Length: 179
Length: 110
Image 1: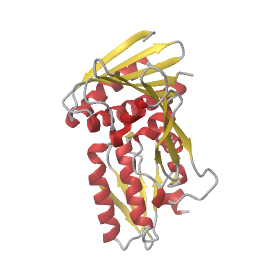
Image 2 (image 1 turned 90 degrees about the vertical axis):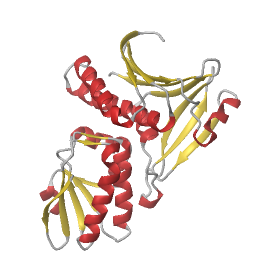
Image 3 (image 1 turned 30 degrees about the vertical axis):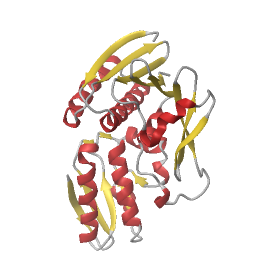
């Protein structure tokens, strides 16, 4: 990955230690980002994206450490989460890697959003979030109660997942604009 | 975690007394809120969130789940006193279309 590395955090996948890990990352973000309104908003977004990545790690990564790396290149902040746990595969998600680049699969749908996975080159999948029912009245009972993927994909300019079959590395990458 | 601030004929006003509204609190929050709702004649709930510095997806899920329960009794949950960045988060994931959000208790009751 290009760009200057700012920091790396190694996080044990234990629920109790996640709060401490997050605090450590918060301190780093607060020190790193200059204090002005735009960056306070960005700081909050960065914080919640990392929280949701870690929550995802707690749910899906067993017995493996998670690494969070934060990069800056030009006007973008990139957050990368990697681990050598099992391949990310909720609801047989990993089958999507059998498809050709450009293939688009609906992952979740509710009254508010649809989340799609789109196959890219080199065993990478990009997640996108589209709004549903923009003009219709929302039915509360049709709303999904899982917001992690929605938060990340709505907060990010790009949100991707890569699985390296030879090494068993899972890599989630979130790219956010600094402007 | 949740303290009753005031109660009138139609409304139950609550203060949420946590800074980090995260996955560690989500289940307990939902259970406590629903128990309060059931124990107070299923009145409309107004939650003051001004102490909350941060909220994650698990807590948002608990809020939505509680709202589904409350709405099934034709009541409602209103949120007040939220930080600007938390309101921005609600807006980002469109939960501002689902919850009524006001600046404070007085504005919610007006």
